[in-house]
Length: 208
Length: 208
Length: 208
Image (cartoon, rainbow over the protein chains, first blue to last red):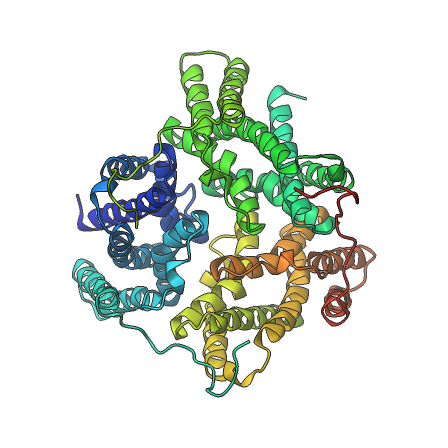
């Protein structure tokens, strides 16, 4: 299995796990677990393929992706009660998936021949929309609206990968560096509460 | 009119009615009724066509579908006050639409030449996403998160249809059986509160 | 720059500004501003391109659109505190964007060769879905569910443009008239609280 296929499957698997964990928080049944796991696992990549016009989308052509989501959902269904802090675990797995996907999405954009700018947007979309779909459908506050750094980490991964391949670093090396960079920034945000400067209304004024 | 076209129109009509009923609960105006009716009526099939790459989507090529949604929305606008339990009616119509669509979506997937697995996913997506769009846009709790069996019924319809045609039952017979199966399961859930085993955290532990 | 390109850029810019204003209300960081600005600015047009099958979507081919969203987001990030009534400003900018987009969406549908009915639906989708994505992702009540006229104004713009070009009024003249009509109706709704007749349950009955 190539490194990139591994990265792709890993991204699907961990995002699927976050969807299944969200299902466990809503106490859904096993089909609900599979449904949310699949939407989260393949949602970002599905959007990417649709925007590019790479249709039918990837998981129609390669059912392995759906298989991974089903497997992970069943696994989480029977083991999630062993986990003490399920939301915390969800956030960490989401961090892994986001890091893998911001790079995978950028790669697929570049391979498809779009401009580096568009490829970076592809990377960020792939990395974030699985989680957006999960949060919107399960009715939770979007992880994007959290205080800690999130989209900035996806941006860092996508930009650093694009920059590294543009100076002729081999793709797989660039990918590893970019995934590590994105994950490190998000991990620091989760561990130390790192935030970027927020918009703050001028003091002395009321916020409407 | 062929049986499948009838099934398709029926699915659009009843889903459109659920969208219009949701609009009545939000006290929208008649254009709002049409808007929500259309999103619900053609939303699932639109997603299916986009994922497959059957573009432009079906209702751009065949405006009849939009016409059905407009008609149903106007009808509901002037008659919804006659209905005593609108949310209950919404759930029953939704059950009919879901049953018709989980089979129609699977048929269209198979006809498009995708694998049986992908066709089943197409069927489930077609059956559920109209309702998801309706609930997300109108700001209601998604019917998917309800306690009673829902997605499982769509899965039953899609799987049983695929299984029946694979053993050479004629398509229309298989479709009728599968629609009846899916509807019966969902109806039992609505009538008797049937549920599938939920995820339950181990007893003695607090749920975070 | 042609009149239509100007209309298109203007629509993206004002919708992007509403997304950035929504980000300011959620106190996001600058990347969050850019993200919400981009989703709102290009969301409606993206949906339109996907439904038509004009893929890859427009902003992948023409990165200027993303550039406009980034620029506007940065601008709003540093100036939004100067605005006293940010939600009010959001509504007015949204009105401008909606008016520009209901006509632009219809034009692009007609140019693509779809029927006038489908083109009108394209126009309304383009005009409304940027705002729907903004509201759903930022967790705000959708502007579509507000009491004042909204979708009706988009419908007026799309229908009047289609009607005017069908009686051989030059496209640019028809576009200006239609934009002004749509904007005037929405402006009247914002200024005078104009509403269309709402669905009202028969009096003497309880609403479930």
